[in-house]
Length: 81
Image (tube, rainbow, N blue to C red; front, side, top):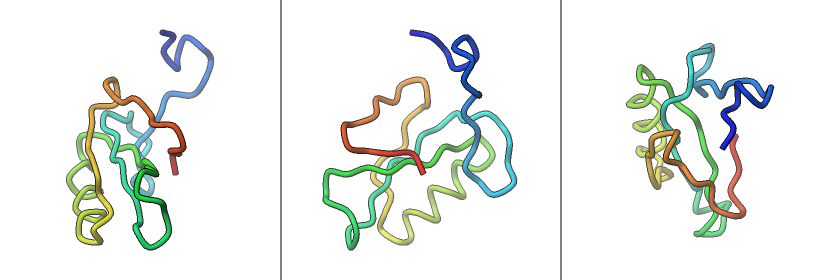
């Protein structure tokens, strides 16, 4: 599989506001009042922001899974936000 760097695509970065660090984690989430139960949206997180972003989503009952970026398999119908 080609890495983003070798394909010419920009390297994935953390979703935290103002952070440009490399993404290490995928935070899969779903807002049950807006999305079908199987739908997953994703935020990316660096090591520094993983806990903060996870906590933000978990407090709202949105967090479904936290997976290492290199192990993530995006389910059909999910999207990165």
